[in-house]
Length: 216
Image 1 (cartoon, rainbow, N blue to C red):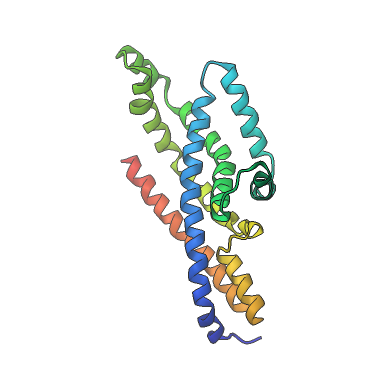
Image 2: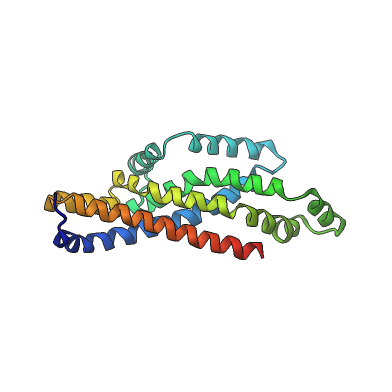
């Protein structure tokens, strides 16, 4: 087996297109999962069981079914009910929704880790409930859970190739397309493997920097 640098050069336009899609899915999916996860967490703390019970059922169902099944359902079944979205939008939503059920647990642990004295101090100062959450509890909880949230960002990155099943050509999808057209497999797949490693490493560095900044 010989390494063909010309094949690498030919693959670069495909790679750039796939990289852009991968980063779009990663960034938007992460933001959606972080936001939805916090919403689920707060809803599960509502006193009414008529709120907690439906949220618990939905999040347990999403967490305990494969992401691949959810992708097929959202992309192929929802259009039969009149709900049609682009493949990219469906992929972002599926990954964001799926991982929000995991970030929900992370937020819950962070909130429970806030010392009871913080709640008591907010009560003693007669702070409104919303003010207690936004100014006292959530800033401390989120600061504690940044490393765990970062781990899920890496997991989302590694799950982006699943989007090929709904026609989203991210990095691996572009590599597969190139390989089928040029009958070159080693070079594009190697480039993709290195790219995943580098993106994961850079993301971990950024998250460590963010963690250090929040600890100050």
